[in-house]
Image 1 (tube, rainbow, N blue to C red):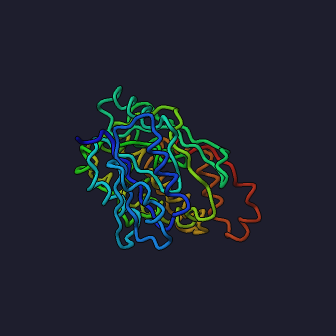
Image 2: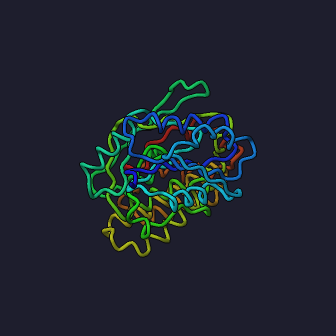
Image 3: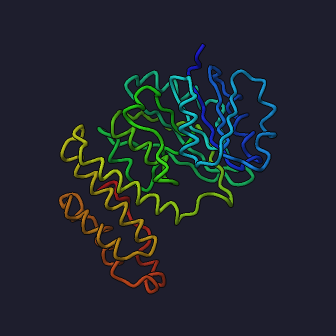
Length: 315
């Protein structure tokens, strides 16, 4: 019999953490599930660490040559038998009621393609120090998800497997922001439902993805979605215009954070030209344009003057 939900865990050299991730799935109050670990070429004893789960009919371990986490997740999708999919990073873990809460929400929103909850951030010792709650704008979720407080992190949402043929799989070309791109593509083509219930704990440690890589990945995601929006006829013209402007602002902010003033200035001005009605009165945009005219070294010394701006998603 097919399980209701498949939990896909890609891993690479996370032997010290991955067993806890698997254990958190088997500790769920909802038990009609399967766990698929895709080992993306680990050399640190990950296989041995997971051997204790091998007798469970609900557990699959698949080893592959290193190809990246997008390829690992996509292989997990191909092997998944569940109606729903949840992608869990191998250094994180689910809270005991995570699947029950998410699937109950899915049952009350049968047309939603993606269902999300709250992420809790913990330190190396597992102590919670912050949380990220879902917030959706009324109407279409897509434009509201293009912002700095993106909350659909791996482990915090489930998707319906049906329909992925249209949405597509994870894209290795936009790593390490492939999960962001994937969630936004789901939102572009379907309904999103969320509730402020804690579902996953995200571990912060010394080998988390560096911010520079995230900014570069974010630029690639923005460029990809600007191309997707050209043919996004399902969006009303006003929503499409706002979405384009927000992606340009996202690119501008990333370039700014990378110290690329020219790239930042170009995209702040592009955003203003695309959606002037929504941005002309946004003081943050005007401050960032001025800041992009300041040489980077001088800007760093003046940083407090340009730090702490309001959320662009409200533009």
